[in-house]
Amino acid sequence: MQSRECTISVKRLPGGGFHASCPTWPDCEATAATEEAARQAVEQAIDQLTRRQAANSAKEPHEPD
Image (cartoon, rainbow, N blue to C red):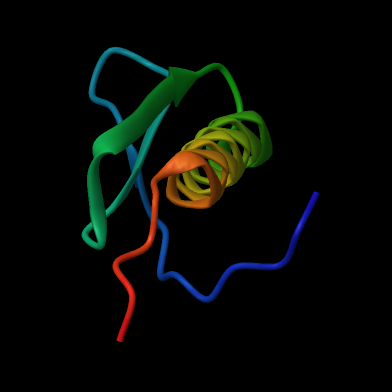
């Protein structure tokens, strides 16, 4: 997985489990049984989104200067 600079917030849920999210990527959030699993799920989602963005940017034609 590529390294990304992003603050991931993890909160314990009242009913059990953990919720992780990243303010930089509002669509990247996860709920899991453990703090580490929630954090890893958000890291993977961010990695997938940034890879997709990079692939789409490479496909777009560039305007000549």
